[in-house]
Amino acid sequence: WIDKLATLYWFTVEFGLCKQDGNIKAYGAGLLSSFGELQYCLTEEPEKRPFEPEKTSVQSYPITKYQPVYFVANSFQSAKEKVREFAAKIPRPFSVRYN
Image 1: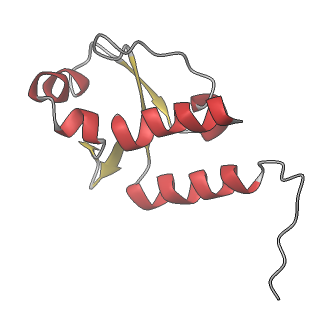
Image 2 (image 1 turned 120 degrees about the vertical axis):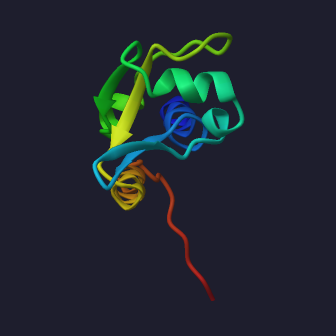
């Protein structure tokens, strides 16, 4: 599960894309801090897939070049909800109690 969460982090917090008013917008810090990759991700060259955490979390990715694949959420709110739903499925072999 750690690898899946790390991959979700990569494709959301670092390289996340979402739709807003019918346009694709970047929200990932890795994109916003790289003018070159920000321009590249909005071209037709990289593959853009719908953001589905179950599929996104197993996608391999390069760390030394522009991403060949990006995942696009229907909205920023939708991305947050899908990540929460995914995280709720993580097995927790423990319980928490408060006194």
